[in-house]
Length: 225
Image (cartoon, rainbow, N blue to C red; front, side, top):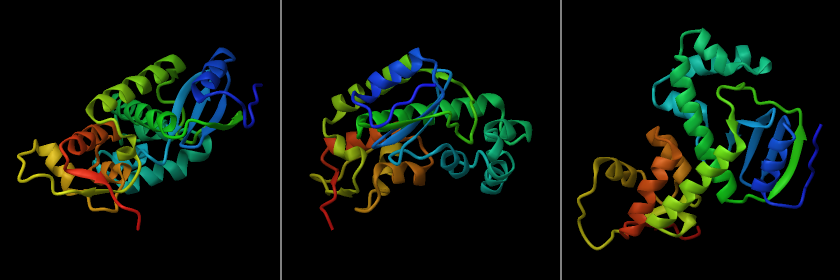
């Protein structure tokens, strides 16, 4: 069984190594946790990205009571995802689509905002269970693709993680509906993750809108309290 504790090297390097070893466990960075099964990524958590439960319940896809019932009944068996499908709360396709989006978004945040590896805990599994295992190479590519796109829109990554405030810009601006709704949630307190959660939108889509707003001079990192 592979064990890495406070190891040297970047998170991508260690993920590649764990994939080659077909390792199962949890790799922690300063900004997230990667859960692997037989060398594939099955789940990623990051404080900078809403989790699957938030996305499903806030969007109305699953009622909060239904989500917590699944966690209580199947969490200890690591089959929450399977329970949601078997109980008729979600179709398998809808669960897979939402889970993959949440996984790629959280992976971007975990790698782009503090990818220093803290430790690897072999054998650790996530209570959600494996919905759609993803090759490490695919996760790394999708994270790179998101980083490059966001950088082209606006190069300051602080927009992704700190509380944001409206600047007022240079005058009235006609915005696309989604961007206008995103701007309305910028209040000097919320971070991008909190805005994504409040709007029930995926993190990456929210980051795109926020970076466009920053490029237009309409939002900026809020000053420290």
